Length: 316
Image (cartoon, one colour):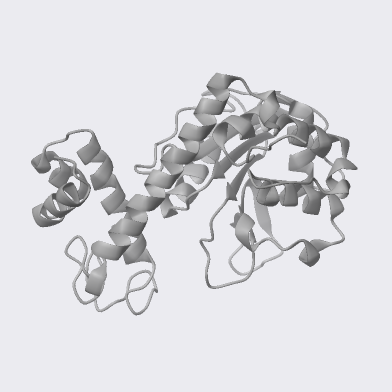
């Protein structure tokens, strides 16, 4: 019995889905809201355009881009630690892919649909038990009318429960594979092995399939994930004590007046999330030995917070 590596890590994810189009095709057909009469029949990999890096989370995003025989483009991103910028990043990537399909002067009817799939290994929507979030352009008054050329799907793996969609067997098995397989896995469920593509993905997750360099990259990846999570956790513990961080006092900061912004009440969510991202960005700039004045200009944070984080993490 071999030891398994977590497919959510970049080196494993790309070995499975970035090098074997047959496996990626099976996965996408299982989880994406594709027309029933138009499944993916073949795939070719494409090089990704450079998309903006999310400060503080650049190490924990994995992406794969491909196109099928119908001309549709698919962008798949695996994100371990959620940040609100991840949604904008995927929207940017899919929009860019859509625009770049044609050159100036070419007919618009040559444009083909683009799908963005974001697999998230942490919970980001705490207001609903729903784990499958499907976005596309819809008519405001007539919900039956929509523009389907640009679609985004975000899957919260921690909230996924197999019993909720038992009738979609392949989707269940693929998402179980992504959610459940990790370093602690001792036995592979027989139902996974009954699907040839998932059986192959399991084999590609075995430690024996990796070179020493790949194993080192795997360990480094999880070390970076741990570092980023620790930064966020420590920032919450110290910087957010009594509701104060980056000048946040009594729930007022980053555009939040009387605890309300974008429909968020009692100082929850948006302001706190932005505060986390600001804090993580400060920490990365400190690691790069950026001067305090430059960090203040780039983040809008007060000097006191920058100095506090510098001292707390010994980044002098």
